[in-house]
Amino acid sequence: MDSMIRERLARILGSGKCTLLGVGPMSKNCVDATLNLANRHDVPLMLIASRRQVDAEEFGGGYVNRWNTASLAGYVAQRDKRRNIILSRDHGGPWQNPLEVDRGLDLAAAMESAKLSYLRDIENGFSVIHIDPSLALGTAPEVDQVLERIFELYEFCCETANRLGKEIIIEVGAEEQKAHANSIEELNYFAGRLKDFCAKSGLQSLSFIVVQTGTRVVETRNVGVLQSWFEPGSEPMQAQILDLLETTARHGFWVKQHNTDYLPATILDLHPRLGIHAANVAPEFGVVETRALLKLCREHHLVHLEETLLKEAFESRKWEKWMTPGTTAPDLDRAVISAHYVFSHPEVEDAKREAMVCLEKKNIDLDTVLVNAVEASIELYLKAFRLV
Image (cartoon, rainbow, N blue to C red; front, side, top):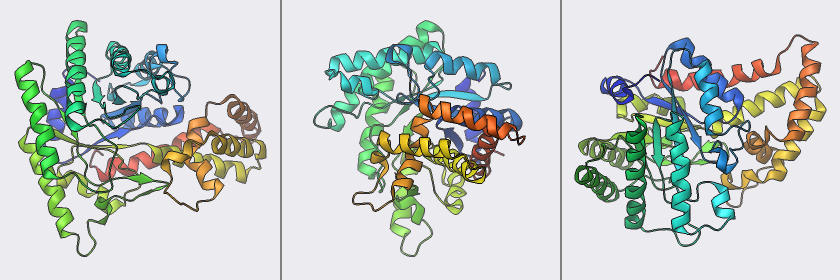
């Protein structure tokens, strides 16, 4: 992405005609699909890496392709021919990396750990920095405690960027997505405190606030109220969400929506018209790739790869966070939901290499098929968001 990123995004978003897309880097193939589309359509796309997916070398990188912050940035820089990829940190903050939880770090140590992660982000050209200090080892922090942590991390990131001569955009959002929307009172208080802080501190102004518009992913569906926009009796929900968007604009911030996965096309098409400036999609693309891989396995009798992938995925138990309480989903569904977490497991990689040899004899490139599947899924969002 070229310099003056804020001005470029302001030009794009100022038209009021599109919604930017944040793509979770669920796998190497997902990153390649994002790069291909950004190059082909000459459109800006955000790669939104959580600390679990990709983090600094000091934290052991992440589960995606064994990349760390520097190696992901280097990989993207070599292939981003039109400089359209906006490297973005998603859910940065204390205890957002499992190592900080496993080590039982107290607040002071976890904040310093988060700062080190942010330092590596900024050094390596991450342009959008999401500050989310909502996690805790014990009792969840109150909103004023969250804000104090945001202010400390905000100041650190801005001063670090200035010292390094880097340009960054700050995104703030401090809670998991809810099935319902924020209240106006919640948003007014939160946004007002942030605006006052920026004005008094003399730091660069905030760009994105994560607004709870009523999106929440469980299993492979979106259960938030936003998906009910066109249903009879939805007028109060519509009015609340429109008030939230108007309030955010009045404070001078751009709206960022998380957990946009699995929404119907009719709702996605609404996003530019509603004034949602950017929206993140992540687990859906991992599921798309997994389903494409399993389809190949079944069509070409790649039994070893299919069995290995499903076994590793199910035993990882990474699916637990995505399940509905009391769900009766079969083990296969649980494995499909979590398979992207284990793509880089040695057992899966070995089985995949074996399968690739078999498919090459049939003139089939396995990764090309998977990249194409993810591209098609991402492109649906690009069209709905009027980016292409």
